[in-house]
Image 1: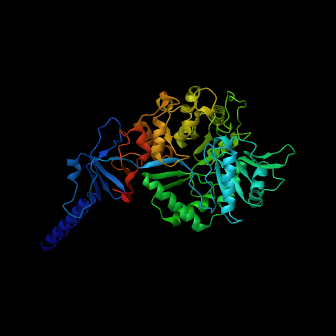
Image 2: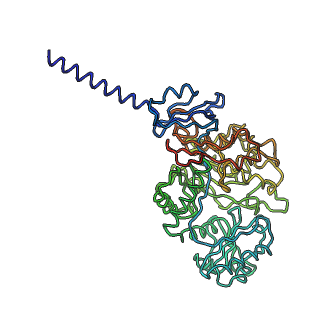
Image 3: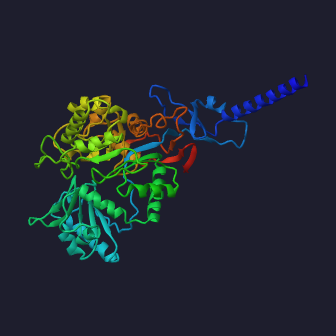
Length: 518
């Protein structure tokens, strides 16, 4: 009898303990009330509150529904958002984080000629010690000017290390001292996928393009110390969090293993996916990086995007690799997601044909991506859909649509309507709300403007899909990661001109408030 009574007491205590644990497990750790919560399903009504439990979203609903989950504890964290909009954390699907290399970066106007650029560089030379790098950015006029060579730079600053890069990231001019410092000798041969500019005598003229440029960029970025890389990671993360960016899909130009090491040392909360960006077709892949990116052409600004119809001034661009099947096969054989910078319609047509020739099926599982996709024209939609293509666009490029020939370039709405997944990455200004403005206000092509809802979805849910993470993030729904951005203004209703001014007043990652400016 006593044994039976003791057993009953033990069972009761165990039951009470389990009940208490279950009750504790069912309690949120943070509640956001009085908000406008962007619905995970556009067909569903907007919610008013969110309950977070640990790193995940516990519940989404009305004020009354979520209030019932709040424990009877005056110290429990409940935040009244006073009607502010909550969206899923922004996921920048295509970004090149800045480097930490110490250099003087003169301000060269975006639309200036050589006399103005000459003066800016001359001032930089006067203001800096002789061993400091000078790195400038050239706008459209100067980036397309073939007369700017190392001869001009050497005259400006004899012995100075000067690099002038195109604002597009495609094409640069180096002084003789900069070339020497980065290991380029007069007998350099063109690397796979890139080339050196030469004068009529065959001598290097300081101009570098595509993989010849990025190989040198990598060497330059790798001049940064470990501490400088850590500082750069922290600076980048701090800026991103203010925009409500919670995830970035990064394609660092510098050594990717060092980049990831610095990111870990920086201990920043921003979620990071690093994508392999090898400088040669046979370069080893980096442990910890996911995906394999190739650049198959340039941009229309320097007439480097390969197009089927000639540019107004002549020429049809060029595809960087003579045989694009090799890089494509490497991604497939390594079971890596294929990411291809393909801007022109000729490039995209050749890419889709090569993928189909390698295998007409089996691509969908890895979701091959076309970065930019400016030349994905209507006659290529069916092939892109069959191969499971995801397009990652960069709306800040839309204002340069006029650099292409006449035709269906920089489509967006039509791509979405065709059922091709479309995500957004910055590849330029990091501000996602500036990019949403470019995506939804298309004076160049009004019929291709996305709605605000489509643009936000492209920056969140579809960006997660583009990295095969749609089951974890990109929507505000129970069970998803609690990555959220509370906005300073309603991105869905704000005046179009005010969009670039929107910021996150509270950024949450993994259920924790990592930035706040309420």
